[in-house]
Image 1 (tube, one colour):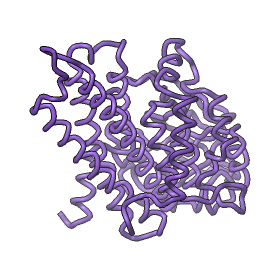
Image 2 (cartoon, rainbow, N blue to C red):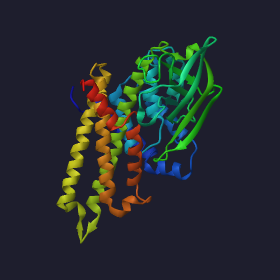
Image 3 (tube, helix red, strand yellow):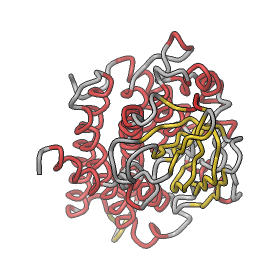
Image 4 (cartoon, rainbow, N blue to C red):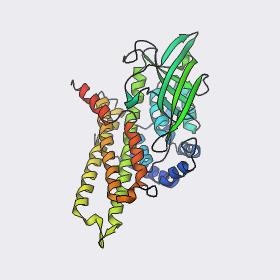
Length: 375
């Protein structure tokens, strides 16, 4: 499989780049932050995404979507990252859709996602650093379940119409088996969401399930066997976050290179200084290697390859490291002004920091790769 976009994917890239660049550039994010917007993103913009068909990019054509794949979803996410556009696209159109595909829940939730009326949030994490521990319990109650426990780092969890929740129905918190995945509407009683603004001005929530009662038909897949849909969700989310990180790193790199070409010291553009040229060339190389890793992971996911899981971890680790390098070099090569709120480069550093933690940081995925190799 060639590690580059084909003609149709390139055409999609041109379309989404123009659309996001016009409707959701960095100043759009800055305006939401300055207004202390309580939602964390624009509902109107999400509706526009739906009108363009982007919300259904992973939904099959027979269900009203575009029927495309993770490569195309990544094209959209890269432009979202490049423009720092606050959007529920990753959690809703990518991760949630991946979890619901092929289940009875698709008929219920996909129409709202396609119409731009539904947002989804992922209630997966309970501890720091995306540790694979599920302690929130789901006990049998009547014809359904009663959920008790807490989740954290739930992006858009305070406004989501749909919560995808991983709960423990058997075993102990650290067991891989005994997990059940649930699709829970926001109207569920005894569910409390406490929003918190993150470093990049996005909003995530802490969720408190105080005996939340749900029907048995909320189960995604089978009881005690939620690992399969959860893994689909995680692979899609991790690959999508990697693509968005590529956009953040690429946007920061472009901004920095542009600055090197126009900023002058001693009557000379600083981009002519050899030391800075070497650093820019190194950064470009690291971003291109990360890009190849992301496209490979996307292609393997689309091919339903057994090798996709490791490739996804490689992509997430490499984009986190490359984008961290990009934003750090960007701030440093901008000099003192790079630390001011007036310049956008600092926003890229903050977004990169949050995305690097989502779905596991570089160390988390390096450990997964090592364990997969038998270490």
